[in-house]
Length: 149
Image 1 (cartoon, one colour):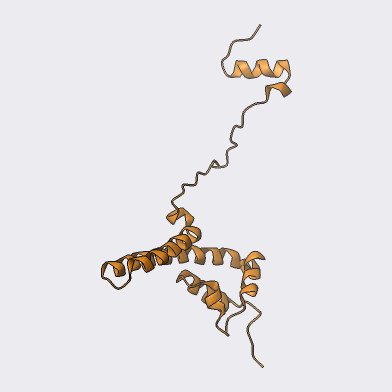
Image 2 (cartoon, rainbow, N blue to C red):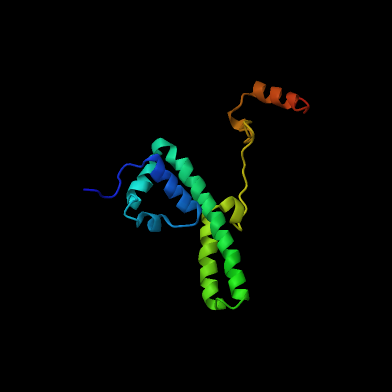
């Protein structure tokens, strides 16, 4: 008796990722009887079985680029009259939403600012109320400030 796979083999993981990168949804991929059910795949992602989490996220990012390409194709089809503008607008909104979430660094209209440094500690300021008088004097001298009287 054969049924859906419950073990995520390397071949199954690769096929899932190739389909995700092509812009297919996980639900449509898992609708195929030769593929595991959605919950099996998502558990493999969150549990990072065999490093699948990183592979999955890269495929999702590639899927965002695929959706961005479909936006261009849809615009071209509207220009040639193949799609009605109102119908295309709904399609474009969905594709933009998906592209922004799958590859936010490349397709999001929001700018993300990274406040980290290359291994250096960010100066958060000094709480002078917790420092001794001698420590305050040392700090002021180190910064070139005169000795307070």
